[in-house]
Amino acid sequence: MTDQGADLARLRGARDGVLERIDRACRRVGRSPAEVTLLAISKTVTAERLRVAVSAGLDLLGENRVQEALVKIPEVPGATWHLVGPLQSNKVRRAVGAFACIQTVDSVELARRIATVAADAGAHPPPVLLQVNVDADPAKAGFDPAQLERQVDELASIERLAVDGLMTVGRQVSTPEAARPTFVALHRLADALRARWPGLGAELSMGMTDDFEVAIEEGATIVRVGRALFGERPHAHEGGPSHVHG
Ligand SMILES: *Cc1c(COP(=O)(O)O)cnc(C)c1O
Image (cartoon, rainbow, N blue to C red; front, side, top):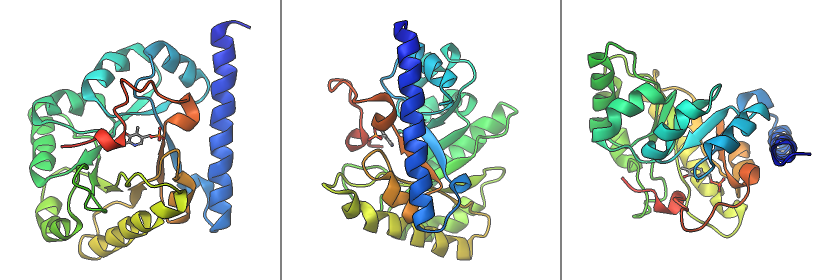
């Protein structure tokens, strides 16, 4: 087999393995696997390898750096992309044209800017998720939950912006079980917000390689999985969740 052929088989196997784990986690809590979307986090993975990944059925990809994504997107036909890392206001224009969903809206200002920039371009803004810093981790971006409850009306009033739900990046914890309170808190917050803002969508993006099954048990609708699909990332170019900041 060629290297690419071997990698295709490997990625297919990894995808099947993760889908099987998603399935089992859903069954444990009586959910349908159709409610859970696998977003393959492709940061640091080359465009060449991502073309193989698309052939393996991994065509929904998430990137945490706008710059890196903008280079890869035109080189990987057939993929759909979510932004899962920080978005600076000077990159909103390009992000709006490139991503099917921006999961990392962490201020009313950024939400407004996405809507305005899209309107100026005569386009519909992509749907967004509100990133919430559930654990009040100073190293993480996201709305403070209490602050978000106060800003619901402002967010709801932004014209044409579809807010599909909430997203969180959990603390680094030593066991998957230790991440559960974070997921429970995000789910509860979403329910509380929706009581006042029925237009808030139902997506809950939570859970990564180490804890996505627990996230599914607590209601995740999007799991963001990198290493379980693509293998360990090179350390120097990590850019992992602990490095995410506004
Ligand atoms: C890197 C990253 C992930 C995926 O992490 P893995 O541990 O590789 O599954 C998920 N979400 C965000 C925001 C990330 O930056």
